[in-house]
Amino acid sequence: MSRFIVFLIVLTQVTCLPAFAAKGKKVAQKGATPQKTATKEEQPPISILSIIPAQGEPGMSVTLSGTGFTDKTIAFLGSVSMPTKLVTPKILTFDIPDLPPGLYALFVKREDGATSKPYNFMLQAQKPVAVSLSPDTLYSCATGKEREVVISGRNFQEGAQVLLDGAAIRSRVFSRESVSFNVPSQLFSGLHQVQVKNPSDEVSGAVALFIDTRPEILSVTQGGEYVNYYELIIEGKNFQQGSTLVVDGARLYSGMGPATERERFIYVDCTRIIYQRHPYDSTLKSIKIQVINPNSEESPVVTVNAP
Image 1 (tube, rainbow, N blue to C red):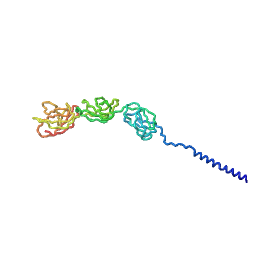
Image 2: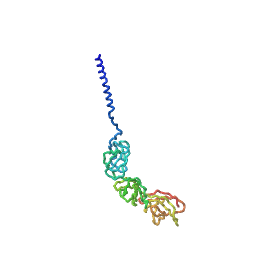
Image 3: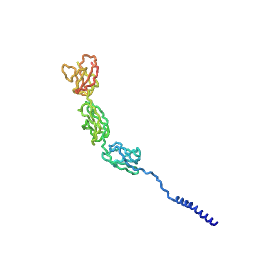
Image 4: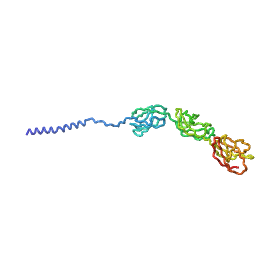
């Protein structure tokens, strides 16, 4: 009986040991130091993988592809910072500022101070752009201020020159958008090319200037009356010293013609001709009048009613 009691006591002690061990282990876990959790996600490294275009001029837009871009990332050309536009976390764009041409180090910098590797970027001289002329058509007999032409465009620099058919002529720069010049009087009829050349030797594309030498009759009015003739005042443009007046198909002489010819005309200037008409009677008739220049350019025929 006593042996049975001793065996029972030993068995009870062995059975309870795991419980005490487990309890001790649980207490040890309560006393362990907990691990710290991250409070802020780390940003990926910032880098530039491609630059499009790889060179440009002021005013152009450049697109960067890479990694680690944010909406507060700034681009740099050398020491000059430029605001950027975040398209996606991998696409960034910026506009090239007005800087002197040359080779610059291009890189980007994030707000946390992370900086990308620099790359060479060639900044080209800004090319002038000629857009339009005012006026774009000039009559050969224009004088003074009438011969002034204004070129509108952009990127014109101080000291820029106007090229007329490839030859430099005197000009005046009003602003980066406007340059003027006077058209030489000896310029021949037809189309001419006008360009702007900056001091950096960059040349704009050409715009067309048309020199119009074709005669045109704008009006015919009756002038003075004399014993056996009266005057018709013919006004228009591009009349020349050697022009011919044609009335009803007959060519008339200028000034004092042959004694047998009563009909004649007087050239006044490029805008006026006086036709001395000797009518047979005072009845109104339909008269067709035309002016032909020495280079064979003809005015449209006009019809007037006169004695």
